[in-house]
Length: 230
Image (cartoon, rainbow, N blue to C red):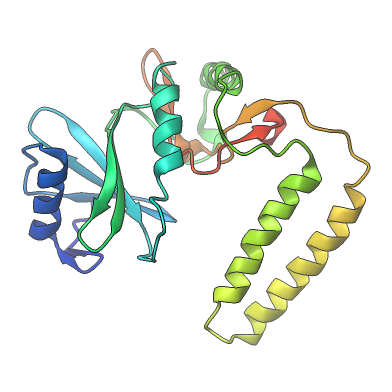
């Protein structure tokens, strides 16, 4: 049985649904389920004809712009190649809560790479190759050192926003920072990456197996670099 939320970012569920009805102009049902998610909260809704995935941030922060703008643009393009579900809407709800809505595609997701059959792996590989050739206006990390520096910046953000004052966490972040600096020096002489489009989070849960197609989801880490990363 799917989890049913009682509140979503401080909103009672009926109020949250009513805001979505107004934004989307859809006659959404009164029920909502949690599909899962990590940095995002993925919610399942329907209007009697179709089902939709509503994505909101797992944490409510202040945003200068909608964090789903890039995913929206990517998904509109990738959808035309039959490699993604149809994007429906994006925007802000109530007290500036970002959201992204896509059509729900019924299919099969696997828990780990070992769960895939050989023929499924071939289909996934073909889909990944097709995706790598789609030109998208996304960040370009054409060298391992460049990509590492982006991850180091994210680590710094975690460190700067840490309010736990945990010595263990602080020591861990310091060790990761030192390791990253050493690794960056060793990457200096490596060759430039080829210009492939990289999903950036190519895990089993982001691959939907359908009878005649493969769909990819969650494009928040997509960039241009080496498809070897996927």
